[in-house]
Image (cartoon, rainbow over all chains, first blue to last red; front, side, top):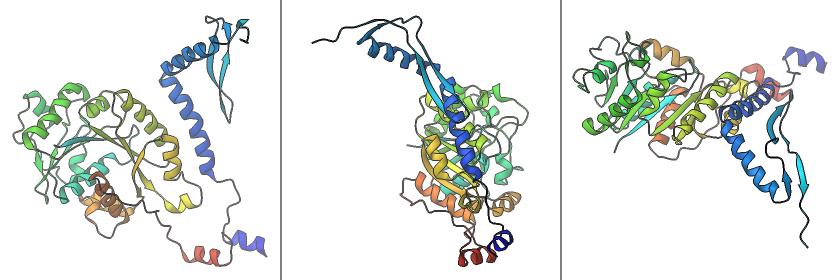
Amino acid sequence: MLDFLSKLFGRDEEAPSKVTAKERLRLVLVHDRASMSPQLLDILKEELIGVISKYMEIDKEELEVNLDSSSDSVALVANIPVRHMKRAEA
Amino acid sequence: MGKTIVITSGKGGVGKTTTTSNLGTGLAKAGKKVVLIDADIGLRNLDGVMGLENRIVRNLVHVVESEFDFDRALVRDKKLENLFLLPASQIHDKDAISPEQMKELCHKLIEQFQFDYVLVDCPAGIERGFKNAIAGADEAIIVTNPEFSAVRDADRVVGLLTSEGKNNIRLIVNKVRPKMVSKQHMLSTHDIIEELQIKLLGEIPDDEEVIISTNKGEPIIVNDHSKAGQAYRDIVARIEGREVPFAQLKVEETFVEKLKKIIGLN
């Protein structure tokens, strides 16, 4: 009976399409904004070097910072080769 | 001291021209001296939306080429004597004027004619026409629709405006269908604000009355019974600095929907 009523009144069983739209939009905006201003990633890179250099000696030439995306998420991926570890100060 | 506001969007067809004509009419009805500039050189339409297409003598390009001789270029509105249109040229293209000239034009309109508001109707796109239209603007209003491509383009325009140092940006979400929003099949205004991270100026329901009023060359804002008209009146009040609460757009329920609610199906 309830099934019949559901059909009669056209109850929606699918996932709401706006959730999909919002998810897609969020991912595309992360990429659009990052590619529009590569300067932003460059600034981030410089600051990362500054912070990490306090604790270890790193290979600044080989350092890579990028946005990586899969179908449902975006991640900031940093590859930072370490040359030497600094000694903890007593 | 008057100010220049650009109405822009990135994407075409979202309602920039309709919004410009309505906000201009609303501000003029509130007693302000207003001029609307159609910056869409080559594809002019603001004249038609205002119902002024038969009154054009000189246009934006003539004014700039004559070193700012405004004689017979400003077309007075049919009803409001403090509302004017500076039409676009239909035969030139976007590079007939430069951003610097546009900036000077907006300044001159405010200084020579004491306009309270200069509203610039920006063409779609982000190329020369866009750069011209935003050049003289103190503030920007972005018009978008609750859909993926319109919001994405709006985000791009926010980026371009801020990189030009224009940070006073507010958003109008146009063509909202409350019923689809309530069924979660349309992005809500809240969703859009969350993604774009800019201030909301208002939301306009998708209203057939807008099409009817555009057919007549009359802005919907003068129609007291239209919901879109009311939404535009609220926006005008906000532009004028008044606090108007953001009322949620109401869903009109059909008989079947009311019945659904009663038996608990929704």
